[in-house]
Length: 289
Ligand SMILES: Nc1ncnc2c1ncn2[C@@H]1O[C@H](COP(=O)(O)OP(=O)(O)O)[C@@H](O)[C@H]1O
Ligand SMILES: [Mg+2]
Image 1 (cartoon, helix red, strand yellow):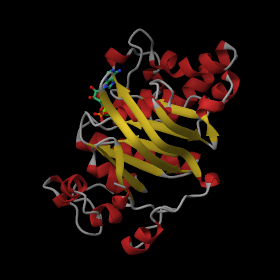
Image 2 (tube, rainbow, N blue to C red; image 1 turned 90 degrees about the vertical axis):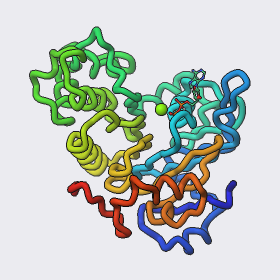
Image 3 (tube, helix red, strand yellow; image 1 turned 30 degrees about the vertical axis):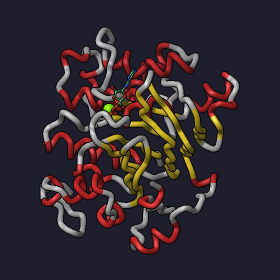
Image 4 (tube, rainbow, N blue to C red; image 1 turned 60 degrees about the horizontal axis):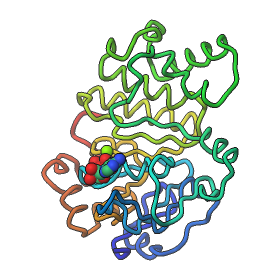
């Protein structure tokens, strides 16, 4: 299925033909935050990943799309080491995760921030305590410093200080997402994994959250791997998109390349009914910036 792959080495919108010429070229290791090759993941007799290759470039926002149940969350969790793989290699920042000592692995993990699907906050912990979970896990710091750092992250994601002592059940959907993002940013990560960060938000809340992600990505120089169903997000904040089907990345590239891709799922996703409100310049008609 590599014939559909459209690899592009930067966020710039190359003409699809030029991008196609580059297909099959190996990107330089130094440019990659994540490099996955020939990944196979399954549960019992169900194969979810079946020889998947994926590149995520340093400093980019990669939007990861695919039909529901295709394995987007499974891929994210496999890269994070939460689901075992059957075959293949996963390199993060140039290190093969299989070849790291427990210490080396912990050092790499400190460079990750993760926001799981549905926010996944601990319901028995306040926003501040949730934000402190990665700090407590990885750092030996005083309570006072942990409080200061948590309050900093809470402000960074646009929550008011009085949200810090609230429990998840007392928060709106948008506040839960922001709190989950504060927790993901707790350790000043370089690489952030977001699993459907805007799902469940109304369009205005989703647009605000996209803007927050875009601002943080630029100011903190983050690399972002974002699973999303949201065409608005793909158009407004993603540098490149990778599409998952049948256990593989069947197409990858900037939106322009996805629009030129003739894989049936990619075509129906990007040029189907919901996509029609986007004009050919990639501007949404939803009033988003
Ligand atoms: N821990 C698990 N055990 C068994 N099957 C799983 C597990 N996690 C996910 N799956 C299955 O893997 C497939 C992909 O799931 P998922 O990655 O959650 O899809 P999505 O693309 O919607 O995020 C689904 O068929 C799901 O049922
Ligand atoms: Mg999912």
